[in-house]
Length: 254
Image (cartoon, rainbow, N blue to C red; front, side):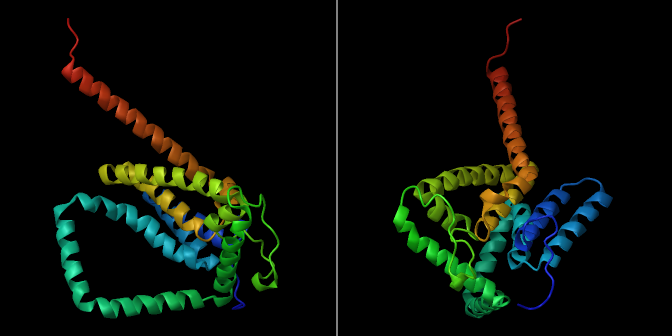
């Protein structure tokens, strides 16, 4: 609509390429070599900017800063700062809320046509979910002119699951994602190794509100592999701790 180019790189479309850029930045932040770390961060940010994806611009902050701030919940001074911030919000909260509302309005109107199509797709998918409540319609269906003929059940993982796979598919996605989020949240507070997995989970959560994760998993495989490696490392660490405790309380007899 603005007649400016939007790069999609090696992804099927631009917004997904921007989210892949967030994954690249998250991986690069864990790199030990300064040169390759800089290259990865610059490349990822370039993907995010050139795709002109609003979701990616928000996600790069949430998915990279959030996991590094989370360990502060175990620090006393962080709670004191939070209390001071809450006090300030009691005074200036109204003005801040007005600014946030203005920012959200500007965000949605940056590409109003895209926002309109997405909201209409979500509304149609939700309303037609009642036609196949438990197992869905089985596939996406062509949309009307109102949504620029975009398929019903696309552009949103959760509404898409309700439309295509019903409540069964919705829960099959929701339960493992909640479990994985809980695992990485707990480990991120305790150990730095949880930062990258938590960033990946945050990316998938952000991705689920604007894309269809199922059809894009083939490009997310490095991130999915990292989640599996992290879960295995946590299990091995737990086993070592158990063995150490057993050795402490049940020493071998010479």
